[in-house]
Image 1 (cartoon, rainbow, N blue to C red):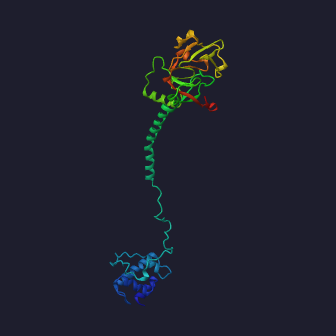
Image 2: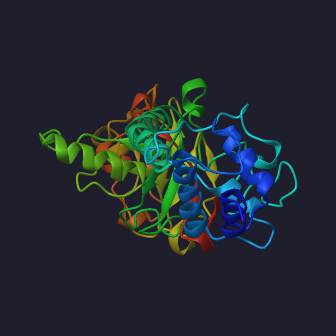
Image 3: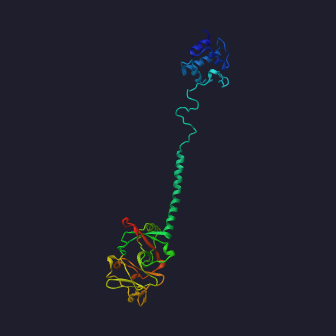
Length: 330
């Protein structure tokens, strides 16, 4: 038996396959192997032993073997030099099918942690801008449009009770004038002037005013307009009756339905109330309004501090927003 046949039998190959392999390696094909050919054969044996020879005549083992070339000094055959029988073994998968566990690179990759982190940092960086913007919008609304106020006393019972919150609109009196019967909020300077508060207290009071909460330094009052500039009024009788310009005003909103004991308004006390004396009563100066609380016997109003200048009016209270069961317009 020739050496080629012996090698072919040991490797599970045909003699032609061994000869073709040797040809591809640039070795002479003969029935007897040279020492170099034996070295190649030994290498083929070692590779066959390490990979195992399957039952398909060793074609798969030959395709999987990766000669190192370092042990024998021979060159790795190029693609052009390989025999047809040395084509790489196929995995048996249809063409174009990806190996198991390997996803197509064409699919969109999920966002990386770095991208998510950058998105979070961007949102955090935008937060101060949003806060400043919201603050600016709140300031504009508070100054020019509408403001919430907290009712701190019982002077407007039963219309408004302590703890109620109302919305005051500020546009109407910029383009119009106050009318009798309207409930208004106006500012009055505190005795001795406004205290000098630290900036932190001013900021706290600002936010409390936005929410309609008391600030602790109340300078705003809420009362009902009973007369406007030029009106002549009286408020007298055992059961007090309000007369404006000679006509009696029905006041169903007064606590208890009538007033029997609060301060009168008569020609005798016009001047202490900073009103002009008239034959029919007391005249309200132009550019001012005369206000009283609905709880007449428990109200500090124009009978105490005089008429209110129109430019001191903050706005008209038009909506009760708290408590929910009292929600509605005034």
